[in-house]
Picture 1: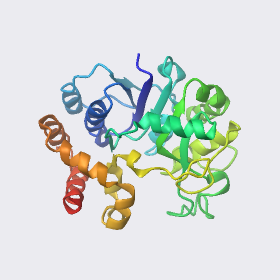
Picture 2 (picture 1 turned 30 degrees about the horizontal axis):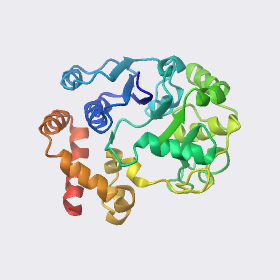
Picture 3 (picture 1 turned 90 degrees about the horizontal axis):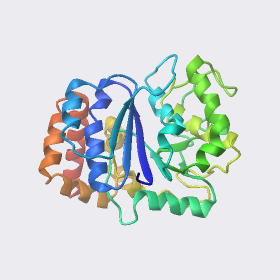
Picture 4 (picture 1 turned 30 degrees about the vertical axis):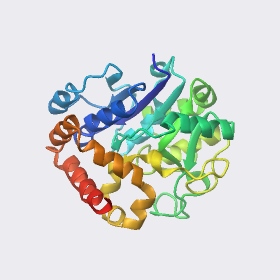
Length: 300
């Protein structure tokens, strides 16, 4: 078994159409990594056909491994931090992330980068602090993402196994129970998965409750080093927001030129073109790819 497992949790038919894009780019970038995709519902028949064209022994798509009383739009993002330990037995490193990433190999690989962070911080995880201000949820935390509502960026995160599970078991079990019973935790009156940033707030709380050191500075790790944006590869989710993807200066900070160039090379791959065309039959995913291509043309 490979030492690294990359996982994602997917809810909703639209998001299922990201699965082939994610798996294909991950398999090309890091054929040595395993992938486990957890579904909250049956895999769409059309997506199944596309996935079946990707021949890679390291991919697994698993149905509903969670006990959830009420599945909300944002529940799946939080559930990625509650993957059953048994599924990751035998692995040394774990990279849970969003399904709407396109992954590109870096000179220092993704896991080697996160391993370096863990060594520097003496923590069994690598995760940078998320936004402090940004979008305000007045009904959630009027003061911003501070106090009990601090966030750890969840898409660019990795953990060491079994140390992470050993440290966080009590806290994770608490949140599994919260999802199973659809109750609130002691910090607020919000239901699990009830707002978009819940997963990053929950991840912060897991780290804090487990008596680990957590990052203080926005976009930085525990020891103050800023997250290197090239390890975001390409986040198709950026293209949902016009104020984000149309802001060229901001996009240059979060979508690095080396990943733009990697995408240009990918666009010459006939298999990628076949898969992306098939996934683009879903209007939602097709729109994200169209906006990405438009943005890339302005950067080359």
